[in-house]
Amino acid sequence: MSHGLEPTEEYDGSIVVRLLDDTAGREQIRCTSYEEAIAVVKENHRSVTVAKIVDRDGAVVFTSAEMSIDDWETEWEHAKRRLSVDVEAYDCPYDNVACFADDHCIQCQIDAVKEEY
Image (cartoon, helix red, strand yellow):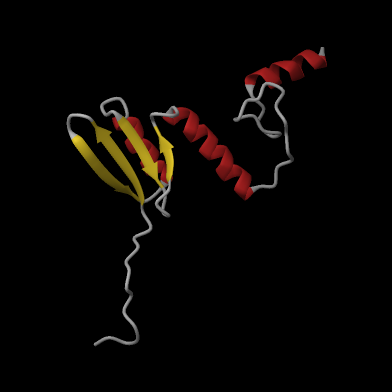
């Protein structure tokens, strides 16, 4: 017996990894977290033409045709950290997207050491 209205849509909240291969076709793997999706991409990205991560809203947030999964993972971890902590703005003189006020890139770290001496 039903109490109230039944949902008209189902949403599992999962993240999807799409593996596209010119010869084998497409494969879609549902993941429960970004960590799991990153692991799936790392396992498969060399054996397929393109690997993509699609977020819970259906937007493609990563594609191996445009970026390395390791670089994207680093940027994702920094973005996740920024959401959980207020970090002062930092403008890297080397235009490194993975350089933050609390976690400088190698070049900025070298500059800081040079300034000390």
